[in-house]
Image 1 (cartoon, rainbow, N blue to C red):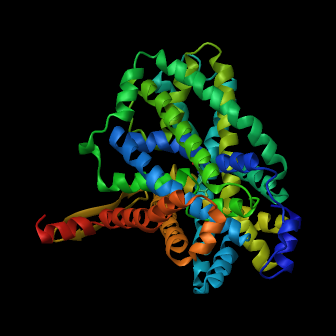
Image 2: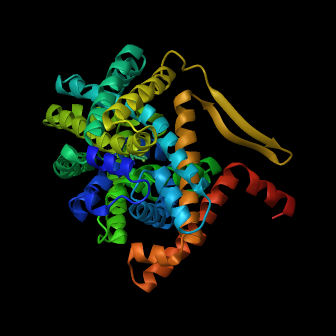
Length: 487
Ligand code: PFF
């Protein structure tokens, strides 16, 4: 967060004097920062395209169910652990484990988060680069009057050119690391306060546009009418993985943000506010994209390029479209920026403490590493797009597809969103629900007995069971057991 918190962390092994540690200036600021982390490419870019790949309504319903029953309780748990530990995720977990008399290997949970943050940021930055690349394209009126084919060509020209993608990736990562190097609080608090509401207003304007396409109802039906025949085990895993991704859970990002939270702030209220806004933005994005998809006979399952192929069509045919389109992509970049900062923050706090180096140096080294990793994603859209991975488990009871024709980008996304984040979340739930002394969790959460009992039930039983079942299901284990038991 700042040099001062770094030096506090370094100088005092276990208990940083709280009074000196930098904190968010108010609950509202925490909510804005956490919302800034949660609302990002996940809501506007990823949610629509994975919904489209998984057939719509049923996927959305499972995703919403996961937000409510797994996301919210785990988010409360993660913020709570962060605030109680008040350190980087690795040290926090070691410290809390010690406090409740458990093994220090819980530090591994923090470690996995640090690695997940690196991996996610490496491709997140490339996609944010696409959004940046669209700003000049919009501003110069390139999309004015273009039809679907023309818009598709602009997108494929962009992703097939590695040099261009590398340039945008470099610029976005530089912007991210520049803020991180100064400490996330400085300018960012202010930027978020102003930009998030603006993004929201633009989404409302776009919804009005979508209403005028004549296919609004079809879009809503697609989003909100569940057809369970379209859902696969992989779809269920993606819905759950996305609940973690979109709320920034399971990798220590929200834990680090929680570590800067003043002690008297209500964790429950803050969590509900963040989850509500995050979900609202995702649903609004869906309500904008799908009517445009149907109005232009596009494919909902177009994949990662979906918003880049649909939104320019809308802007290209709208009054003042050049202005609104440019503003929209600028705001999307900002939304991505406030998320990318939180992706690398766990690694930065951990790196500073472990190697006893400054925030600036840690940021520089991390930036270089993420940049290099990002090249894998850049090339997976052009030079190495033919290099794909397919992984199946075959048993006597059938074949279970884990990955099909996945590019390196698909693989990284799958590994992080569908495996690492839910696994991190599972461990957080188990720790907070079963291992942490109730006295401590009650003290931190500071909610009445009724809500505490509900939270504890969700975090002890519901969240872990669901994560485990979804994992087993995706590996075909549930189908396997059902077959042998003949049910
Ligand atoms: N929640 C962000 C989004 O929806 O774009 C992505 C993200 C940020 C994931 C921070 C994980 C994280 F720790």
